[in-house]
Length: 141
Image 1 (spheres, one colour):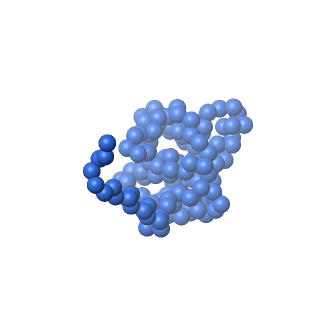
Image 2 (image 1 turned 135 degrees about the vertical axis):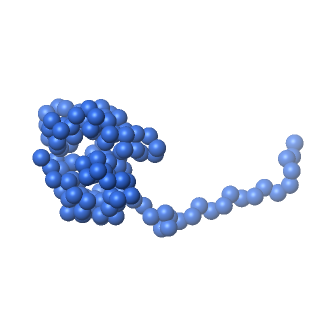
């Protein structure tokens, strides 16, 4: 059984366990999906209701994730996994979205996978796009 806490140390363990679970399932020729991850991690506690609750809370771009949809590796596309881990912490600890320590979750990703795809890109550091050139005059035929 996995001990779930709302701390950076726990989040580092969960990120690493997620990658280990992906490799385990690949070695067994099984799909790496939310349903299988929860079944491996929580065994009989991962009932259909538990899986549904986690999937419905693990929204990406306003869309809940589906339990059988294959997940990409966490090091390549971390956003889905970030939302999955956040939802697991919410459900297991019975806390709301705002109570999950997202800064610790994001920092833990950087610790677990230091040279992989960045989890969050600060919008302040992005270079602004130059404005489109203005057209002068009317339409010419």
